[in-house]
Length: 322
Image 1: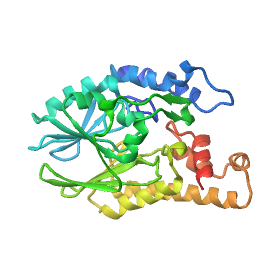
Image 2: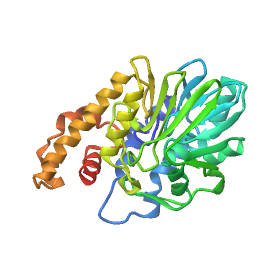
Image 3: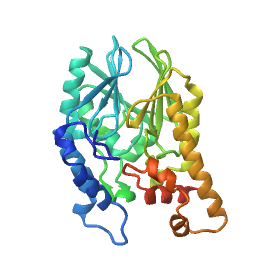
Image 4: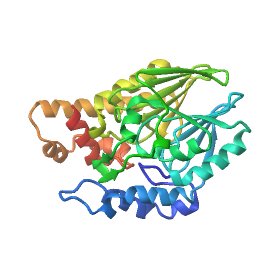
């Protein structure tokens, strides 16, 4: 699966580009000098190019909830008599494939779209999904971020304001409850986690939780510090998801395979172990360069540093937000 984290795909076309994509991603990491405009947009352009040809892989979570994986963040479709609810929209160039896939899942029209983050791999397809008939509901910071120019310094990205048709038409601050397709969906804001706009979604009757950017299954998460992201906010958000889950809950990450409460608990253990180690050394007066040179997270890096959030990037995000 190609995502912002990895550019990996299950299709043969994408698999052939893994090495080149990883190089593109590494080239987009911070430098001492401002990159040319072409360099700043390489990541976004590459993902859009990949999305135009990538297949969408469907995983059935329940009889009515489907995980759709391709380029960008995981997309979830919830189908029923009230119409389809879509969680995140992926890349704009992949929306024709997405809509075609949705038409084969169930006959119901797409009525509603909500996002779990403002980040472009969650929202790039918003305008096209809205044009297909979806009303967009989102946390208020998602609209605020999309409405103006945005930057992601970790990847040297500068993004213009999104079009008006891509913005949430209705917003909420802390939580919103929907009663749709014979289920109760609780949309809950997790402050200052990956960004200040993160939302997780609890399908109460189905016992399914979409954790959004709170969970990268098997990888370090992306913490966008200039958008309000913090390591403690990530941990607190994960704790809230864990408090709602039981041993039978299916939990969907923003990137990677869906998993269980035990899987999310292991990820939470990694986050706290990492943060505690860095915090102790920072309090003791060690600089980020000293901590990196000491290799105090080496065994965690070997297990978790496989995606776009490289070891140096994750260390910087943790250190700078403690």
